Length: 103
Image 1 (cartoon, helix red, strand yellow):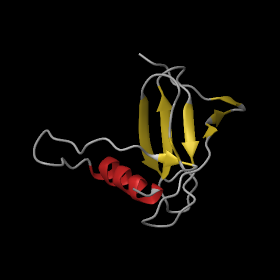
Image 2 (cartoon, helix red, strand yellow):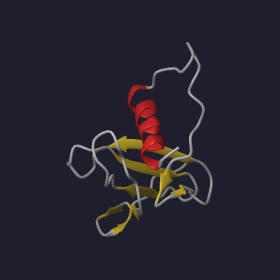
Image 3 (cartoon, helix red, strand yellow):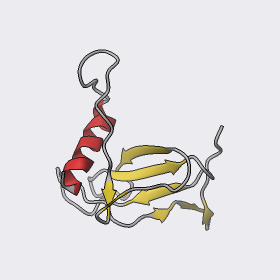
Image 4 (cartoon, helix red, strand yellow):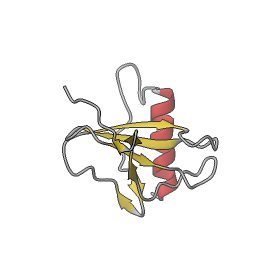
């Protein structure tokens, strides 16, 4: 499946949270790609969220990393209906690496 198709599946799943086959069922997981390779957070679990972070009207990917509480930001470089995620940068706040506590 092309990168934009996987991203569209993720975007639909996260934005609507509609069950796949009925109450309590979710669609099977998909591997989201960035830079042509599956995203790998290296440690622990990932918590993806789509939100327009740069105000261009396209959903960008914010990916929380359980290990260390770091947040990766993948800016959507595609177009409406065809997201394209490439390299990431860690979220910064006040000039420092932003982290969220893991509980």
